Amino acid sequence: MDSKKNIARMLLAVICCGAMNVIAGDKVPNFKKGGADMILSSSVFGEGTLIPSAFTCDGVDSSPPLEWKGAPEEVLSFALICDDPDAPIGDWVHWVVYNIPADVKGLSQKMPPTESLADGTRQGINDFRKTGYGGPCPPGGVHRYFFKLYALDTELPVDAGMTKKKLLDAIKGHVIADAVLMGKYQRK
Image (cartoon, rainbow, N blue to C red; front, side, top):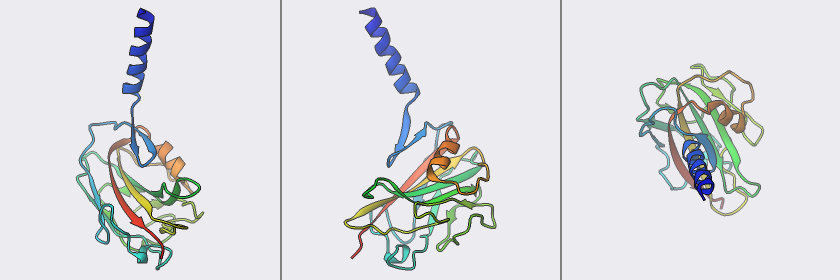
């Protein structure tokens, strides 16, 4: 009986110590530090509301403006992932952005589809196999689009063609705060 209790205690310790933050299906290790109350927002859509068609494949397909506040003082860079967990083939990645400088408080509308920006921000490869933002283009029904911002205690290696998976692997152990903004879209 004692061995069963010991096994149960060990499993509980593993679960507690190895607990993961889960943001719309992404598993990211627990915060390295205490975390912060970061808030991610957009001036063109609110939490759980419709993303305007200008920022989708039905419009000009430009990236929406994003702003954030409440980042911890010790942040050295930010990373952002936008994806659609409702896609028929599973999670569909629309945007991978990293090495956003610590003093930046948002991303502008119509970010150019280039790998590197003047301030050092890098854009990776989305599931459209393109660099930069690829807007919502659901085949049917209402889909949810999660914009996930991570405050990091490091700058990441400058790897060309960074994907969501590579980015999530690179930020393990470096996330000190995060924030999520979810918008929806349905084609007419």
